[in-house]
Length: 369
Image 1 (cartoon, helix red, strand yellow):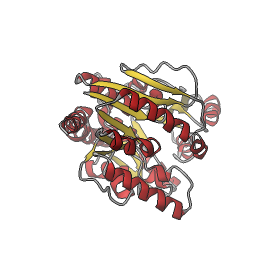
Image 2: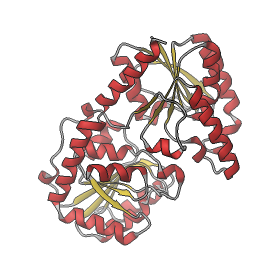
Image 3: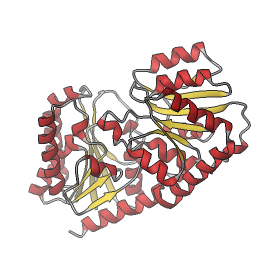
């Protein structure tokens, strides 16, 4: 079986895609990654697969629309030339050309939706409606659809395809030596940890200010983004309260995660893209046996409440967030119990070995077509 995985940006910061590629390789499936290096910089992708890279500098955000015809032309040429047995295309910007092309070439296609593309762009309602209808048309044309959680189905108002697989963002258990018992840490401070994109819609500034106020709390950041300079400055002014480690490889992030006490993922639910976001941090907290604080009215709220593995707060209510941190800080037993619940849920429902079996089963069903 020869599989082509297509995504319109680099695999460099996409751990989910890396896991999918490793899954195929571990199951003796030939895989070629076709991706777009938008920075046009030489990057060490560190993936064990064949790669076809479109090296063309392009903006992120709405301006990328002007560059998509070049990407579509590149994809058309490469997919016709390589004649994959299965095409696995990620997100609407690549599916727009590849799903119709796969029908012409008679190649089974998997359409994977990381995010709903319509909510990435600041579109008027009528344009969003038109784009969503087109997206659903492509979902219907595809032989299978992958979503990252059930809330993605709700976000688009239903997926018009009976062959739907929910593959969660659960991390690989091998990335940790073992679960850490948080009640046995040899650290005076309770450590709050965040890793990821540092932007203004994730309640980061509020968390910094709150943690500065609470005695016995230290907050550590790993990541990059528009708030990077702000966090650097705060860490210099408050070196005993705020730690900034910059951008680190995923395995290093996981090592720091398991030495922490509390994680948070406080997306602003008033932004549709964030309301339905499938946060890796929730599953990483589960795997590490740590409690997590998440925003109410988001897709992650339902997972946290269903598994009793963290606390849910109104991310716009500063006092509510502060109260949650104090509760967890003052109760190592509560932290342990929430972490234990999350770890059990991870092992039974969300770990990548379960997702791997689902993914391979899907590929095998399409191979028989």
